[in-house]
Picture 1 (cartoon, rainbow, N blue to C red):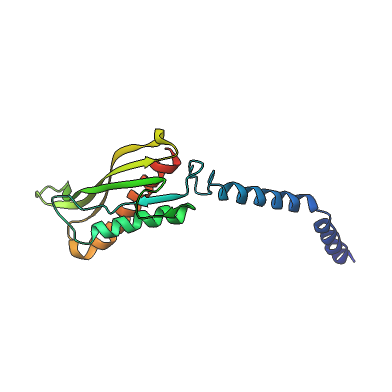
Picture 2: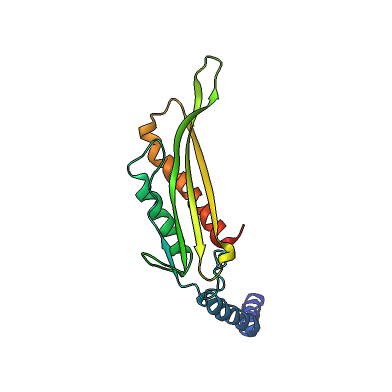
Length: 185
């Protein structure tokens, strides 16, 4: 008898709780309304009102050492970051937001020298210069340099670890650029 009473009591409690359900529906309605207006996004991005399009130009590799696939990989990763994290439409030129720049550094250097003058770790560093302009909010325009690195063991064959290092560095760079452009950190 006690078990059936507790189950029935629990069912009645759930039926009587219409207020939380209405609150959830209200919250979802306003969340969708504000995110579709371009005022706020759940990624923390603050997109200026009236901004509908973005153009991200190809980032040429102007570093002294040129990895032949880095420019295309970085440009596509940056485009993917902005289109997946916002409701902006990608256009080839003259977007409401325009991002351009170049890869200016691609270096591998030793970082942890051991007693026998050999490096225990090497560091791959990638640097990009970014120009950001917004038609709706020119006060947010910037020209900045972003740099990220990853260390790897000196005993590792660089060719075998390069792809994973570049992926992690590019992820960090695109995060930093996105945050500077739209999260206002």
